[in-house]
Amino acid sequence: MAVEKSVQGQKPGGESKKGDPKWLTPTEMAAWRRYIVASRRLLEALDSDLDQHDLSMADYEILAQLSDAPDRRMRMAELAEISMLSRSRLSHRMKVMEDAGWVKREACPDDKRGFFAVMTPKGWKAIVAAAPDHVASVRERFVDKLSKTDQIVLAEIFERVGNDLRSEIN
Amino acid sequence: MAVEKSVQGQKPGGESKKGDPKWLTPTEMAAWRRYIVASRRLLEALDSDLDQHDLSMADYEILAQLSDAPDRRMRMAELAEISMLSRSRLSHRMKVMEDAGWVKREACPDDKRGFFAVMTPKGWKAIVAAAPDHVASVRERFVDKLSKTDQIVLAEIFERVGNDLRSEIN
Image (cartoon, rainbow over all chains, first blue to last red; front, side, top):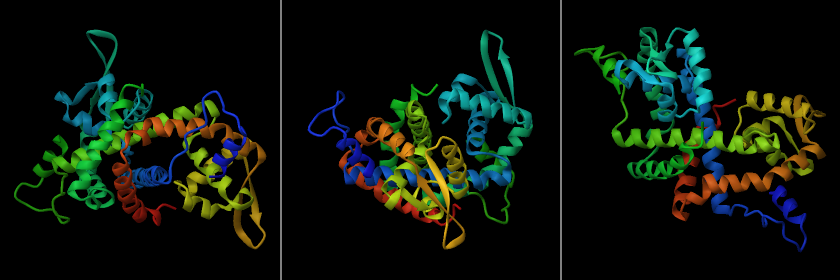
């Protein structure tokens, strides 16, 4: 890219303190570009598919995790950890969904600073209504385009990528 | 998941018009969950890495594309197509970056409804400053975790996934 040439051109014959940037090779660039472009588009498409149920992908994720928890309640910290959300993003979505009547927050009796996220019957109804359409979208746009081998390889790669990010995002 | 059982439970012995939802198998679910969780975290981490340069991932993408175009200018429609952005998202980011003095919009002389996105010298300076740090983040968080085979497989999979979404997002 033009930017790469320009950055290299800034230090003719010399070396910066950090060393010259290690630009991506063509094979690395192809993997990165196709992954990032497709993923951004996929997230937008899935979000837009959920519009008919007045849910975003993040909301769906929160409700799905709560629906599997005992008594449909979970500590906020644990919910952030298990879901795809940073704590700040989770707090924001919880506030929006609290206004919609789908979840509520309750103080933990044994931890002054802690809160539970609790799904309401209305929230349960919302996710039960959305689930069949959402899984159909995920199939059509992603899962059904993968061979069994693709699925196994992807799970392995993204577990590796995700694990190192897990501890950072808070 | 609890939701899946509940949806199935709603139609005991019967069938809905659309047929019962085809829930994900454990292998499909592992691929989907690990991919989506890691990708959301990766995007957040890369966005946050770019904070020091007052750029978002979307902004970086727009500037990178413009920096490769002749005269650092491109039709808005083409820029949306080539980048990872929907047209509405592109318009929004262009407005923010126009206020920052990094880009400007110019009417196309031969097309009354069309606009060019043009990168300013200030925009060029911004991306040249950000590029070495950004490529280092992309390497550290993603590319350097992939074997050569992983890279080839990912490029192939996400080209397939992305192509079908390309025409939709506008």
